[in-house]
Length: 108
Image 1 (cartoon, one colour):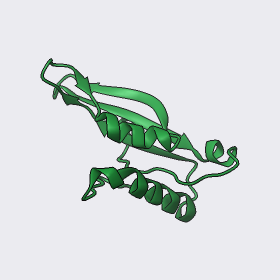
Image 2: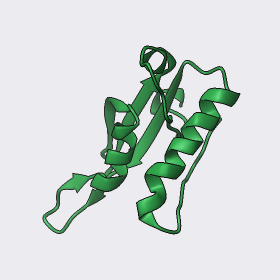
Image 3: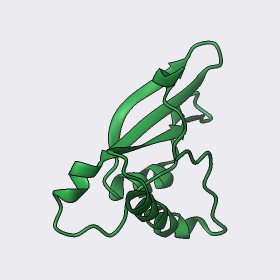
């Protein structure tokens, strides 16, 4: 399953819908892991970072940092987060899971 983009009408609802998407993926796909690519954007000071609220939505659902991919040709930075099915199964109660993913840079 590849999801290229997630949008919500109200950003306050992002975490809720993200949880629904993750729950659907874990239910419908026998995958062992879900990975997410977060785009980093350059701020006024020249620093790159992902949107803090969006990243918090992912980490609150159990996704953890896997790697950062810096593309020197384009100047783009992508942070990859992931969660393994075994991490979820170890918890006593799961309310949701994650997915916004694209092919891994390793796939090319």
